[in-house]
Length: 304
Ligand code: AKB
Image 1 (cartoon, helix red, strand yellow):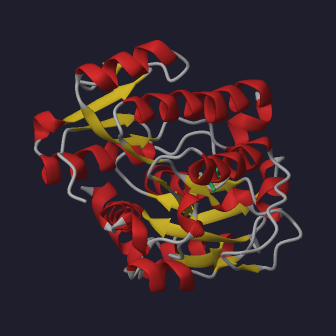
Image 2 (cartoon, rainbow, N blue to C red):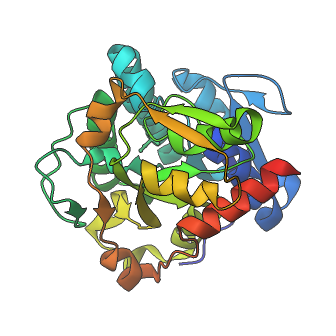
């Protein structure tokens, strides 16, 4: 059934994903039809706290919001330091957004993460496998996926791998080393990496992640299976040492030392690779960036 198109709301618009997704949504729907919100008030964002249930509802109804990208969340490293806050923002905040979405029959995109997997998951993670994460962050993402199917609204998500981008810093995650390393390499020629050199994780260039998000939201609901709460999508997987070697193609004098901290344990609990056959079958997902292509893009863009 065709539905009238209203406006688009983005929460957490100033984060790593939001910074680029807002631009892409503005291109697609028109600048004035995208309402970018964040708890921080610079860069033209409207202030919205996802813990403010009434405020979200008011905005959704007054602005006739029919599509929501709910990106406000705490990531794994910050979440483990503040487990109660992580639960509040990631679960209670999501429930508030779902409740507002229901009031205006809005569709909702809510990101999941590779952090839904735990140590019992195969090293190449299938779409369907027991989800027993060890981090609070991972647990909140499992609940988010379950809410997608039980909320009664058109709600979808993607299990994002570690995301690599140059436009906005990553903040508070375990995969942040794969972004920080570029800034340090260009600025200091050296990086102290907080995971071991053999740590291999699923990663993705932000262009792929934004394209995946827009593509998933284009698909008619009836074409999507019970995986829609959190689709596995694969970008590429590499170890920290392979990342260093790829950067050294551009910066041969770049050095890196490995000093694992608590984030190593979160990384160790996640799979090395992702199987994305279900996303391919249901909505044609295919990644465009491999490790060397990501590194080329990062170095070129950060040097400019
Ligand atoms: C994190 O490291 O916490 C995030 C994630 C994998 O969801 N990037």
